[in-house]
Image (tube, rainbow, N blue to C red; front, side, top):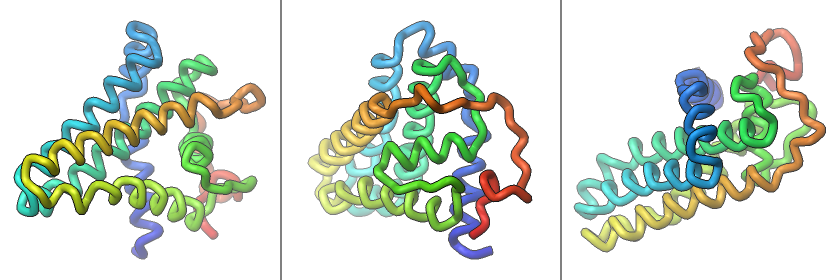
Length: 186
């Protein structure tokens, strides 16, 4: 399995394991802005923990930090989709297109592995901004937490700015890997 396949499968697994009903309930109960803030705080927690002990905690914590940031980014994106469209179960392909647009990735009619790789690179570039600062104990916690919090808040703002009025989301679509639009083959 090459790195693009591994990445696509990882994103799909994260997406499929997110509690979409819980996101709907949280947005209904607290509103979208509070939901985004809560997700940002969860991201800030791993960023701070990663930088708290300096280099040693950074080495161990970076993978957990990246995974948590992707999860929070996906949760925020799903929350905004629900807030704007009333739909909380969307296909993976439709979802990743919104994620890509929120990051400024050019996306055509089909979602390919190379587009997914571009999305992943954008995420990693944004998250690596705090890596150097995490080497310094204690100060790294402030830097890591602040960068993660800001990243998730920025994602929330970017997704909220997307005009979704013409997008028709299909709830619970079972994707057919043989079609161009939903398959992730190049």
